[in-house]
Image (cartoon, rainbow, N blue to C red; front, top):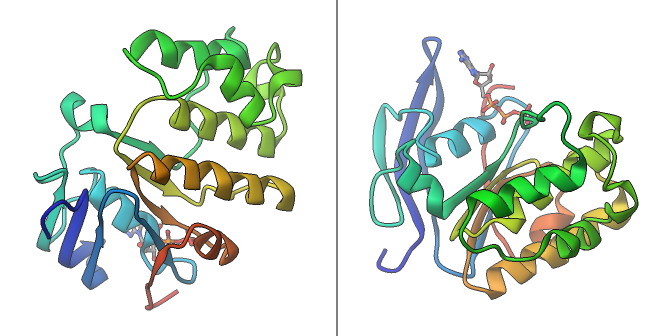
Length: 208
Ligand SMILES: Nc1ncnc2c1ncn2[C@@H]1O[C@H](COP(=O)(O)OP(=O)(O)OP(=O)(O)O)[C@@H](O)[C@H]1O
């Protein structure tokens, strides 16, 4: 598909001798959101890892920004990902974790203060991440991902640990990202998030 930021066709993945994904395809052009849904163990995280170049596919074709995904610094210039909890740097506060992002990326999508406000962390800025609640830490992880520039967001269960009010706020934040021309592929168990972001839904079926 011309102009697609991510395009995958007939993706097949085997793990531990089992076929986890088979015949999976998706595309996301600038401004589009794809939500991958399905029961536990149906392969949502595996698919996101394939799109990130972290999991080889046994068959099929995946293109991200006109090339095969690869775990290289060039690739990660344009692609931002959340999944497992990031490594938190000992001794650095919530604010300083965001400042790290501004130090390593030439341009950022928002200032540290704007990110703290958008992710409702202003009051917690001086605490270490490990002193935050689970949901607050997830908000910090998302803030670090959304603060840096990217053209594609790969989000694995971005709603994890978030309360209902912030899940709605997250939909607004993601809509702001796509309005700027970014594309999003997310795995989610929250069916309101795809609806609120106008996502194309891909449902994975299979063994649980
Ligand atoms: N390294 C591995 N070796 C063997 N099997 C694996 C490996 N990693 C994952 N799997 C299996 O692949 C399947 C898909 O896992 P995956 O994490 O992609 O599912 P998921 O849809 O993201 O699940 P959840 O909703 O629980 O997050 C699971 O059955 C899991 O046990």
